[in-house]
Image (cartoon, rainbow, N blue to C red; front, side, top):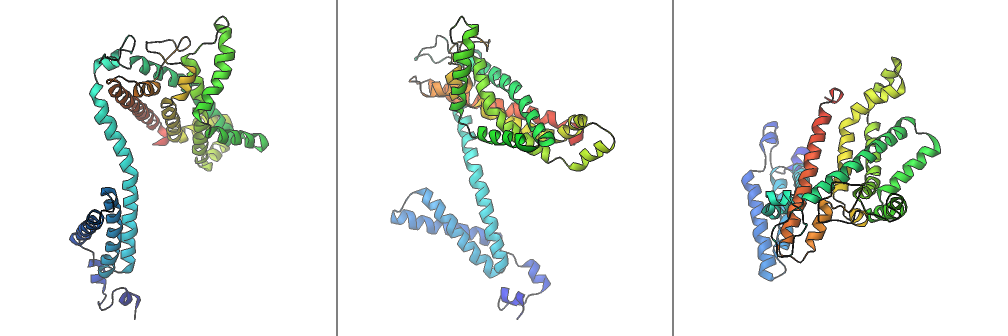
Length: 361
């Protein structure tokens, strides 16, 4: 007996019916419907659980039924292929559902305060019974703090990655990689405590008549500590993906190494570098603990990041979520939606700028 005969006993296998024997879509839907009905009857009828258990049991019964039905029609190999394909699709759906749920929750709950008052006013002189009040001061603080942190961390991170990939050899490079890996796992509260003990308590009194002072710049320093390892590791991986013949061709033409790195290696890896930078910026923009420790937070608008307390959107969300006012939750949801929108806009803009590079087209 041939292998094809063993796949479907009693069916004469020819090239024509091998290509045409497929499980109909109606049968697939019938298996799914039967799985749901049986699962609901077992779980709800016997009082074993709620609709969550019904969905899980339906999924298991559907896979078992699909494996049996496809095995009878298409053969064991095709049945296993369909089962694994269903598992992959299910895993993809499970990964997308939380993200879709977060987006839907942000949009549905955050749209209630998307008005001019929210984006044009601060929380200064806003009482618990006042429905007005916005996040203008927090938006300004977030843009300034993250912008300064990016100006500090991006050049240092990219240059550090270039050193590790192009020049780093021996124990010193290994030590740098080790500390970068250690910094990747540092909790944000530790970065905030470091800047608090160093900058706020030791350095800032030199400029404020001996008095420690919170500031948005201190928050930027804390955020740059969090951004730096992410930028170094992502940039390092992108630079390692640049093909070696590109470097060798430039060296063969007599181009110095620094110019090869500047004109060929970095532009080729630029889209990946931008992605890593935007991931670091997104993480920094959503941090609350460092800003709370070293910026202090403020209800009024402060355009000067070097003097006085300053707020941020993440800190604003934290404060409004714990406020007793009945109008505070709506402000918190709208601020969270605004923060996500700012990060999305920055990411799209950075991607568009990176794609204009002629070497990456």
